[in-house]
Length: 318
Image 1 (cartoon, rainbow, N blue to C red):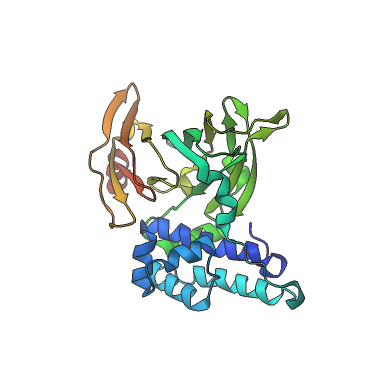
Image 2: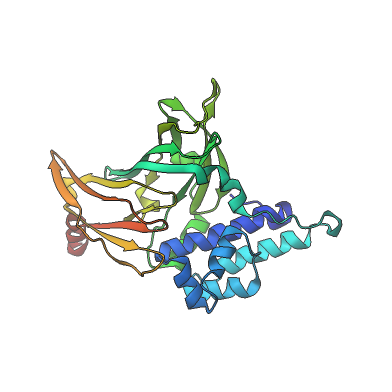
């Protein structure tokens, strides 16, 4: 997983701090503004920290831990950052690079259709994402950023953090794959934390390059797997790019008697129920839940949650 603080760059340590804050804020389902207000900061401050416009501080780390109920997780990330900063020779200077600078290529993308599918077979969860991307900018797009989050115990961040510290999620186990218009895509690791992964999907492979040129649209797909022991009963879709249509599909064994509901969180409102309920369809031994919306606002998060009633009954009888 992460290298020791004395062997990582200050840029990597700062990015890891920002990713840790964003992860636990997502776990809580809070907007950046909401977290800032709970911490007693200006509403824009959390956004500045997560984007890299402000460097991490001990005061911020401690207040974030307290607000998010994470114990000392974020403070430990700050300690790693502080150690990296202390080990940086003064003659080298501090070249503060905002994580937003690497997102310039993505600012020209529009998602025409976003389909998130989650399949569970009783042992393994298999998420797969399909996005129809359109380049509305003036330059070719050569990579796309994606995030993978897991949280075994939603609502109990200290317990989840301790769990993943002991048994972190690894790239080897998830077997991540990606394709663009049928072409396999290479990918590079941006962040590798215990319960959070960020990767760049590259519009290239061993056979050549296939950048997304201005005016072009293409489907990209990626998928991975996570054992049930590391996956909580939730599946979240975050609107990070202008999106025309968002769709979520959950497929569970009918024998588990699943029930599904959803929560919406935006920049201006706390968590609230989805405006419409997911539709339920039984297809043989599978029960499929589908929910969709058009023109979702940027930075809105849609979180699908569920429980298996048959499993609960079995547990209560034992």
